[in-house]
Length: 125
Image (cartoon, rainbow, N blue to C red; front, side, top):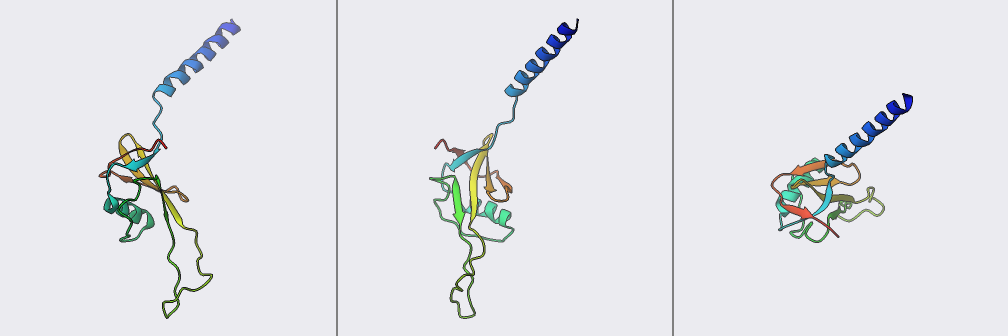
């Protein structure tokens, strides 16, 4: 009797695992833009940075899923760079896709911003 109960429980667990694997939520995948959309990307990154406007190149996320943004160099009162004042590492962002919806994510904080008007595709490279 105990063996039948144990057999039933193991079978139920295995069947449950098979059904949940079929309905698993798709993961975010690296993506590339299908056409240049730098203004929409800049708006998404600005929301992540909590700033008004930023400027990025027109070909951002066209070749690579990663964007590296160098931090601004600190200047003295005469506008000259202050040596040794580069305190932070560059910020890195990646373009991702899930179910035809694009996202931009800050790599260090993992903060993610949806980009509903952006058209992108999976980056298989």
